[in-house]
Image 1 (cartoon, rainbow over the protein chains, first blue to last red):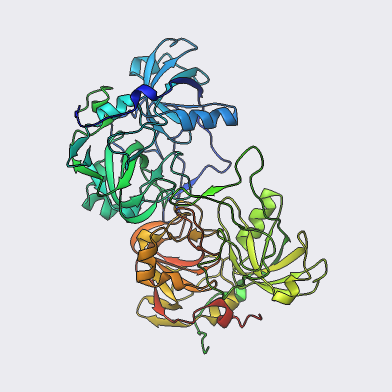
Image 2: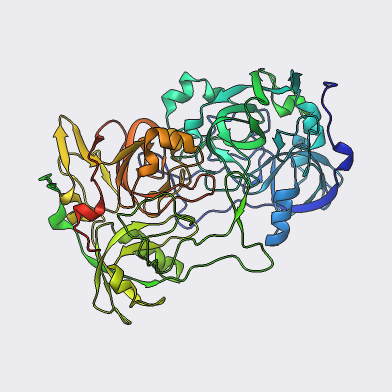
Length: 289
Length: 296
């Protein structure tokens, strides 16, 4: 790790939050619509996902908003908000009920529910309703040597794994690719401490042209001219570094989920392309081809 | 203005139906939550927001500069029951006639000038200022809802989204080979489209972004007025709102600007096409007040 970086790790509180393994749900009617209106009936959100795992592709699944790993929520609304707002990417999770009790996992995303990665053999032991407990730590994280940059949902372990480089006062984060601000869509209506903002994949030609359709779950990505401090909006001269947390969608204005990790003025925060910038690798979760 | 068009439509087949709402009370979060919302720079603010009877802001007035957060001009109505409200929100079309049915202003007629989006879902109705002084929160307003199912016979690729036949006829329009163009006061680039992306395009509004004030001034967008017709570039609003190069959406500025990130003026989207079949041409006075001859 870069010696020029000074973090406040020692001041961060670590506390337990829990959620239960969710059951997929459907609205009455059940269709999601393609851009031309054609209805589709697709799986993707909630439950235990046996097929898509962090490190796998984000595009091409016969699914909508595919959530890798285990998707957990707390049935009490206020407790669920605590689960959402306190949990950080890279936090350690443990199954505390059921056959898989004692198994360890890692938080890899926050969508409508929290997404936790477990090894495939542990998924086989888990069931809907099992309780997963997370050691939540990372809220309040500061890079004291570079106070202009704001961090969101970044655990100390992720902070160490990002591979930040420092050059003459400017931080640069390795990312797999850059996304243009004009395709950032659903989630623009939310505060930036909550869940993600979908990239809009409806322009399929553009997805191929820019290689965005090669994105993987867990990829770090960079966006220029956006300010993600209090909401996510267009602002010249600001930068955000984000994480791909869920898969593509057929719906207009939707696509893979992009969760904010860092934001700051471009003079203090930059990114550079590194194909290995995926948390499956950098957090030591799994190696992919 | 001399406007209007002779575009061929199926207006003769459109059904007119009653959709009622009640004048809604403004709402704010209660204790123990803070009453503040956060501006794009994190500054807490406490300002009037959507809902209610607004006495001094009307369609035709400026959309920027008010000490308010996405305020609705005129009168906002809704139904307390979610399903009934959906009926009001989706079937009421911009340009529809509305009438006050109860209270001190009973009998007064007005016009639907917009809708608001997720988290409020209200229909915005213009009544003359004098009539507003006689209205009360809770008064029933009945909308003669007509416009759902409306289409342009010679432009099947253009989807119409909640525009009344009367308003459609009043728009300055121009037809060329395979394309229909309408008069708009301004065009908004895709990177300034904000809250509402990915959400339904059958009701509610799509907000432009206004955090980058310098860019707005440069593009002249900070001079927009409530009721202005605007084109949203590279925006596909057929089923939800989203980015698509070559697509375009045209709507009307329905609510004012606000300090929150992603929540500039709210735009009620009235039409869209995916691949160049819909265009806009600049007409500075393309505003509901002129197009529908609205009373002060």
